[in-house]
Picture 1: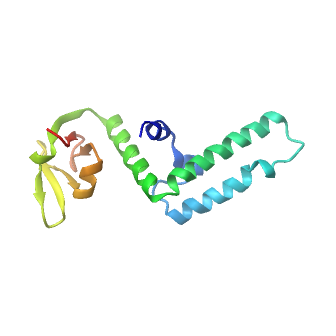
Picture 2: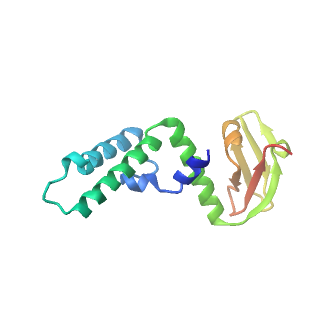
Length: 149
């Protein structure tokens, strides 16, 4: 997991020139186009060595991006990490809350907690196992979800 956390700091979507909402087929298309463009075998022989080295580095980055975004599992993990990083950068954590202190809603299989602003923190059962930060649906407050209290 440690290696993944370091890798997740790069914006793999921008490396592929893709939007985070892009479909898997769009991501694959962008990857294939870039790989062909930057593949070491496709480089002209009269290009300076420094430019060839840059292309190889770019090719390696593109390949890493696809290894993460081209796999449903690692893409999901990366997207969750990006979301948490965005929340962390947005503001301070208002409180630490135990999962058991959230209310269970059977209608949509989610946990929720009222925010002091009158809004609501909510997270699906599946997300509750993976996320640590939840933002209020109304204000900018964020809670940290503690799984073991």
